[in-house]
Length: 75
Image 1 (cartoon, rainbow, N blue to C red):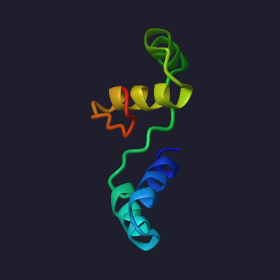
Image 2: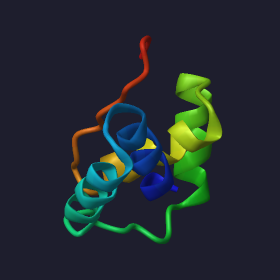
Image 3: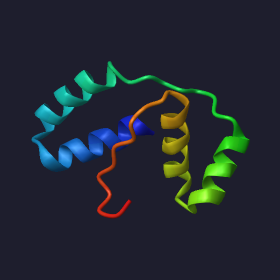
Image 4: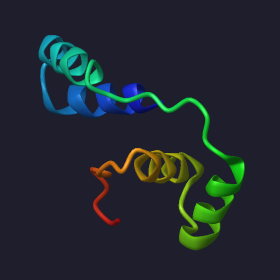
């Protein structure tokens, strides 16, 4: 899901060819987390009341000690 969101954000700001190239450069550096504990997702959802996909992003960032970057106007 991250890749789809990334390319959607890039193509809103850059020409399609540049967006595609940037996507390919960035996605090569992305760590894929395939299994996230359902209880962790529930805990995050209960604490934040955020959307399901945002809960997934928060959980992923916490599992890899990553930085969560958002284009949301309010976070």
